[in-house]
Length: 185
Ligand code: ATP
Image (tube, rainbow, N blue to C red):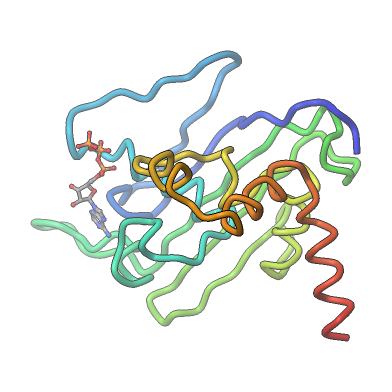
């Protein structure tokens, strides 16, 4: 594993929560702040980052059920049939060993309940996404995406929960995933 960092290049949201129209947010270099009035969708962008990285818990995405993640329409606006989030990561430092300078992860959810993941345009399983992220020290539970209230949870977490977090952040998680797959086989 190389030691370079991975940075976010962009995130694209379509039909995800309040983002009815396809919206692309480009992240330049350095520190990026997203500002806007209350309820304008800032936290929805953070939710989208966690979701595209494979978050399974609706509560962590501030919703009661998966369908709530799909744009539900408004006055004179019809609901979306699908939610899609595409995140592009800069891998030019080679931290993710895929020999790709740019890694694009897509997650889609249809109202039928059908859902899928794509890695650079190719359909893959959630396990593959998790493996790729684990190799880089990224993950839904790690400190890489910190939402409101997460710090409180971390402080209050028990030993086992904290262990999981450190494993994800340090890149050990990838070996746990492999071990569990091997055991299943
Ligand atoms: P604050 O500054 O108050 O934290 P925020 O900018 O972070 O606000 P969000 O929490 O990201 O705002 O967005 C909340 C808005 O998203 C609400 O208006 C809510 O109605 C809308 N929203 C959430 N889910 C959906 C959905 N499925 N369809 C349409 N709108 C949605």
